[in-house]
Structures are given as C-alpha cells and as structure tokens.
Image (cartoon, rainbow, N blue to C red; front, side, top):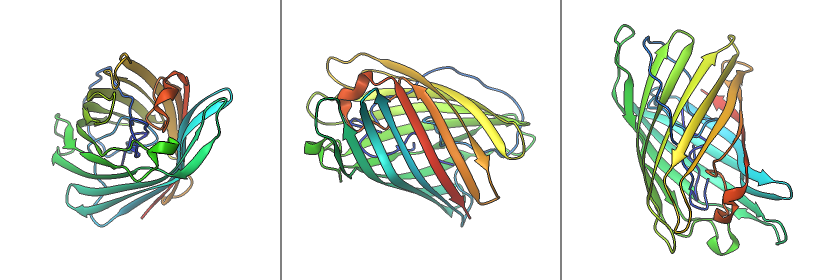
Length: 273
C-alpha cells in the first residue's frame, strides 16, 4: 500500500503519501526475519516497497495536516488512488484540496498540488527467504495549487526513494528514504529517511509507530525529526479506517512557515477491490 502520510502535493509547502512534503523522515533501522504479506504505507509518512496486486485498486478519501492552537495547515478532502498495472508495478495519483489558516491572517482554501508516482518492486522474496522486499517509488509533485495563496509549492518537485520491508508473523517493519528535489527561492534539496514497526493486534486492528528525519529543506532552517503513532481498522475485506497522529513532521503542511506547528494528523477511509 501507499504513501504514505507521505505523499501529497506541495511537499515544501508540503504535505505519503503523499504525500505522498517538506519535512522528512529519519531514523531507526530495525530489521527482522520471517515472511508474510502485510499492510503498509498510509497512515504513515514512511512508505514500503509493496505494490498493489495486479488488477486491483486502493482508493483513499483522506485529510491530513498540522496544527497548533488557532493555526492549522494541510490538505483535505483529498483523494489517493493506486492501481496494480502490472506484476510488481503500481500507478499512483493524489488530488488535493488544501487549506491554510495561520494565526492572525485570513484563512485560505482551494485546489492544492497534485502528486503522481510509480512504485516498482524489484526484489520479491518467497515465504521462506530471509532477504527483504525492495522497491523504488519515484514521486512527482505537480504545482496545480495557488502558491500565492499558500496552497501549493509553486514549482515542480520530485522525490527519489528506495524502500525495504520485512514481515515476520504478525509483525512488519519497513523503511528507507531518498532525495527530494525542491526548486524555488530559499529552497534546498534534502534527504529524507524513516523507519516503522507495526503489529497485527487482532484480525481487524493493526497498530504501529514510525520515526523519521530530514536534512535542511530551506535556507535558514535546520534538520528536523519526528514520529507518528497510528493504525488501521478493517470494517470489512474492502472497507478500512486509517489514522495516525504525531509531531515533528510537516509533510501535510501547505504553509512552509508552519515549521513550528507541533501536532500532525492523518485520517482516511480506504476502499480496496
């Protein structure tokens, strides 16, 4: 599954996922043995190498953002769509409505940036193999939002990551990172890395947590780190609730000045078929 908190358009004013984001991820490296298919990706920022199965779809209706007291910034309602177009190959798109409501200034709401991506898994171990899944998931952030209103980055941006995943029983761990290319005045290209551990608590409930880190993404801004805790609840085979909350990341903030907003969230309904 995808992206993530990570992955949504306008990453520098940003948002996996999505957005799928100008904050990043870094961290811890956990690795374990075993092998069982597992859910991964949203509601977390850190992504995974596992594509949607051939001929199948994932559709998310979601909102995500950052807030502090009377200030808020983020995206939603937004839609993420992933399709298994070929064996080990997934097509990905996120369309956003964005909002930005800084303290002491008029709030803004409108079309946000659009994210396009292709996930390809090039190492697929068998059930008894010890090595992990490995894949790439390049993303392109298209500046469809109005940057003058604080609802987009104003420039085309790209993310070039490598993701690794290992499953062992009811546990799954995955992570990795990559390089963000973020043109624009005052922007810096930067590195992002993150890692996650999750557990299938019951047949319907999964819970997990991630840590992440990014190098400096703007002139005058230092490196940043953060974490998220969240999970997924399966109402049926096709209907799912995804949720997470944390601090330290602005992958869903469309206002780059919101770097000090301490709290982030992600909430989505997912339909799989």
